[in-house]
Image (cartoon, rainbow, N blue to C red; front, side, top):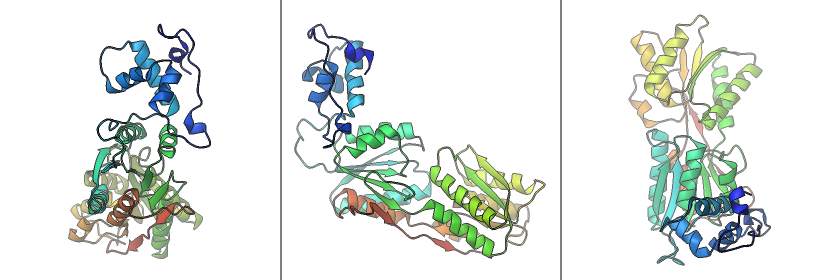
Length: 358
């Protein structure tokens, strides 16, 4: 407990009695404003004023209330006034990126399915930061949505605990490699990486390179890379070089990394890219430098984005069902579909599209 919480208020001479967080209780009771007031040693009205940022309050009181709220996992209900007791017509959505075509297609599926049920999605962008994701998710919870959709299954410990006790539907999307908070909708990135490795090995390639970006943040791409690398090495093939940049993924980054790899001493037979944007950049470099694909170097991407159809050569890739995943997640959090209490996972199939670059 914070030292602030241990102090007595001038209007309360007794040290506030510590209460047990509902997150640790068997009934997983949702913490209330009354619980926060008891733990902080203030009145419920004071807690309300702190949450609403109304009137003058000392820094000490504000700190004590926030410390108690954080310890309990309390989320203030901004709809507690006129809309209290009413059914929310909102769902919260936190995605890592909207510039990426993958998540714009996911969002299209979410919006379509939500509107079919008369529900409006409210969304935020985390830029692959768990800290930002946690802040956005807690802020969305304050509006008491019907449900919440998050990308991936890796989140901060505090957010997982809060969501587990939120008593609303939580959908985690685009990944199934791990235990979900409630229900996840997606596919195995480890399996996707393995299957592409097997496909390229069966083509006869034995010297591989890899291009990725922001592995510290994009944990799903990192899973594919590790599985891909493990699979080729188990078959006696080599990962001769790699380029993992800290810059956001783009066609330009893919072009620059490909140039760096092909100018190196140990040239690969095939380059596996973390996504189609990077792979398209690799193809553009090869075309500009008159490097024949796949004769001099083969290329493979991930996601199966529609823009690949407009390229001079169709890139080999893994097609993922982005729109379908968004649709299924939105139907779940709006109550159009029921929970599967056994598996807690809805696994979608992905498929390798053998293009002209391998």
